[in-house]
Image (cartoon, rainbow, N blue to C red; front, side):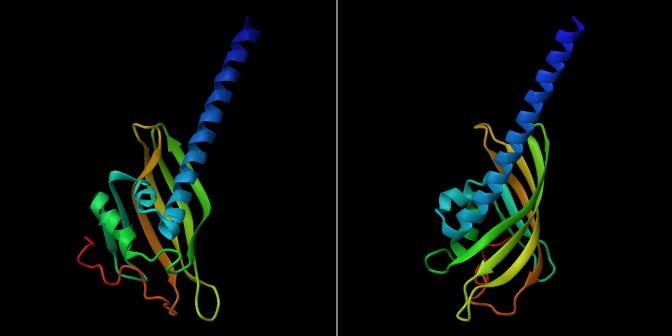
Length: 171
């Protein structure tokens, strides 16, 4: 009898472990969708990374603070940004660290912007991102808020930085 009880605990633990791994993988996939969507689109793929009331905020530091909130704000963020094939660049998600607590999660990652330039590709910027995510009713993990701490920005600004002409759309 004790052996059977131990087995049930093990099965539950394995199921919990598998669920945790699935959640973490789904969250990392959301982070990747952010990068791919911003670089290549389509617009809906990028905006769908966020909850309807989601927000993206660049923390003041190397560049001024800026916030885009809700579907309209995040759509404007996407539209103000350059995309391939107009301009090739890659938002590379690195070292994601995910903590899941039921239907909410926190993720921290690095975002490295590799960009084209007439002199050859270069690292244009890197930042540390802190995300709060929720499991939506459809089961998809979405970002409810992202804070991007821009830690480095290249003086070589080709093409001009995104969102330089959209201050009317930013909060």
